[in-house]
Amino acid sequence: MTTSPAKRRVDPEKAAGRRNQVLEAAAVCFARSGFHGASMSEISKQAGMSAGHIYNYFDGKNAIILAFVEAHSEYVSAMLSNLDSLEDPLQAMIDDAERHVTEALDPQPWHVSIEMYAEASRNPVIAERLRAHEDSARGQLRELVRRGRERRNLSVEDVLLDSRIDTMIAYFHGLTVRALHRPDMNRAGLTEAFQVAMRALLMT
Image (cartoon, rainbow, N blue to C red):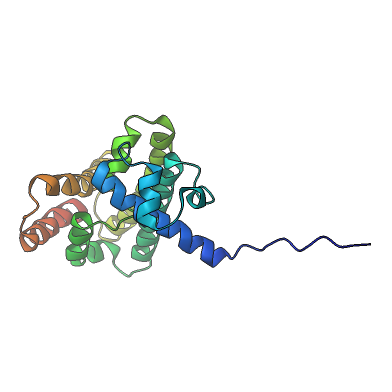
């Protein structure tokens, strides 16, 4: 009796590296041509691999943009979990203002936040996925802020918490868009303004 040849095993680490290679290339192409303007052939050329090879990892541009959504969600969740492990998360958010401002103005390639939200306005599948991740992250942040305010004997009334959390999130979303119109904004000044705003929202 003959035995069938062993199936080729996929190296998970290598596959993850290839996926990241495609995502980095897609981020460049989306920034240059927009989500709809960028073609899979353009992305494959930027990634330095054949279009057929890319389809081993993503079945199209929708799958690529959804991968960006997942990566962004994982990053935000990890950041909030790290904050929650600190002695004073609210003060840590204020102290770390420079990093928050820098990340909003110089997002990592997989953020592609403007393209994600633009496509979500037209594509219900992407909109639903973004909304689910946003709800999860918002819940993490809300609980973190609630506990921090309780420790300071500050109000944790629902309307107050919801309004302040939504204002904080709007600040981060808006800063990236604002940078399109004023790319030369003074970062030291923004950092100081961020600290003033966050202190008022978190600790009063």
